[in-house]
Image 1 (cartoon, helix red, strand yellow):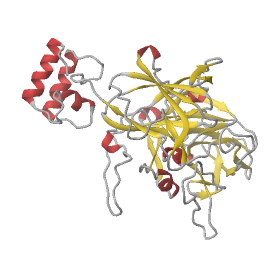
Image 2 (cartoon, rainbow, N blue to C red):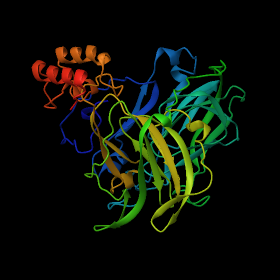
Image 3 (tube, helix red, strand yellow):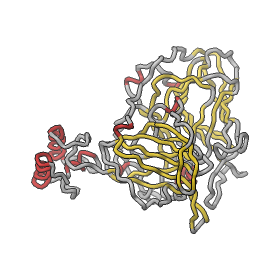
Length: 440
């Protein structure tokens, strides 16, 4: 979506105000979510409930015959601590993490769900500010993951436990067909807090309960294939950007979390629309950071352990591919301690400022969020990184219709970069660019 509709962290408005955002939904079907993103206080507003699901589907996904209707349920999993009067208890001052002692699903404490004897599609979201979950069924039964952050996987993946960090999503199918009416199964958590931490430390084990009824539900088999993503090729990347994740001294609080030692206002990344980049997250800390990028969906390339020799990062050990359930499109990736995690993304469609950050919200609010500026190549209206005859139709159409500011086509047509589309100046500059390669 356009930068103006992305919930830019500095675009606050006062109580009683309102803004209208336009979501073009021009992407693959996916389990998305939204939340408040105010600079420095995101954690507070999300704790108070400003978050929710945003689901996109299409005819291709519907035709797969996956569980639907009442058998397609979102599960927003969060942790909270309560005061004696039932209000939320959250530290008055900034803390490095927050781990509640109670699990909520869709705003309810340790709920139960009556299910029929059939398959359910559960769209699981980790909406916690800091807590990671490793989820499994109390009877040890297998389930199938069919999707992640950016939509469906290539095929259903059988598994008995699933780890999701803050902001990650997982579409999971659980089959209750074989259970006798009255069977109770608990969705449990075993992830330490903080993560990966020490086994058993800080664990809140119970998430919710399923109670099987007598009626028969969705019993159709899962399709053997779902939706294969087109793999981005590292050979197409124009550059690789390193991002060091670490804690450094900070004047106010003593220490803070940083990306490359820089702050929110330090803009050093200017990806060009139509190009592909590799972003390499180098985690120099002893805890996992779920790194999230706005504007794009990416694919995980690999992970590799490293050691520090002085201030030099020295990779060691094998280069490991992503886990099978990470093979699809993602917008959040778990960056494990003392590992280099590499992702690849193609930047398209919209120009402007977009955030990237750790999705542990206590970290995001305390310097672990920065921003990049997506820019266009003038004249390249179709975002293929070349200015040629293929750009002419969209250039003319954008000029005649006045285009939409913030889009790739508007930026590429606005040859003199004055935020106004003018037939005389912009046409002359485009022709010069097209014929003489004299592009701004």
